[in-house]
Image (cartoon, rainbow, N blue to C red; front, side, top):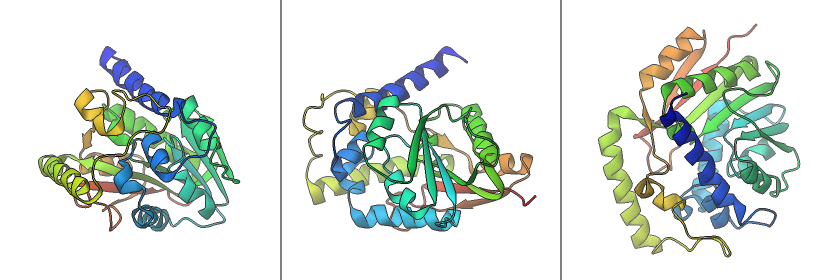
Length: 264
C-alpha cells in the first residue's frame, strides 16, 4: 500500500465519520440522511427520484423477497432503507463505525450492519443471493481496490447469484460529465435555492458533501467499462453493462455493471 493509497482511504473514512458523529442515535429526516450519506440533499430527498433508484436496482438484481442481499459501502443506510424491505434479509457493510450506528438507528427490522473492509468480507462463500455496491467505487483511487472488492462480492454470492456495481464514473464521457454536473448544480439552485443548512448541532466543515471536491478531500474517480468486462471474463462471470435508472440526472455519463455467477 502506497502513501497515497493510505491518504485516500483515511480521508474517505473521515468524511463519513465526521458527517455521522453529530446525528447518531436520533431519528433523521430525509434531508439529514442525504447529508450524512454524502448525497446532494436537493436531489435525493425527492421521493420520486429515490423510488426510481430503488426500483432500478431491484430490476437489475432481479431482487425478490425470498433472497438475502449484501450491500458493500452502506454508510448511514441511505439505500438500505429502500432495499431491506424488498429482501428476506439485508446485511450492510461499511468501514465507518459511526455511520453504521446511524444506519442501525433507522430501525430496519430485517437488516444487520457490520463494520468490515470490502476487500476482506467476513462472510462465508455463497452466503447471499445478491450483492450490491452503489455510488461507492467512485471513491476508489486505484483499480486494484475496485477489482479486489468485486472479487470478494462475487465470492459471497451463491452460484446463479448477481452482483451489481452501480453509478460508476465513465472515463469516456468524463469531460461532458463535469459540464453536466455544473448545469445540474445551476438547475438545483434555480429550482430549490441554496443548499440547506447542515443538521442542527453539526459542525460546518470541509467535509460537507457539496464541498468535498473543492476541499480536495474526496474525489470522484472514473473507470473504463472495458476493465469491468475483462474482469468478468477472467472470473468466468456473465457481465452486463447498463445505464443508470431513468430519472438519474447523470444517466448517460455513468454506468452500472451487473455480474452473474454461473450455476453450479
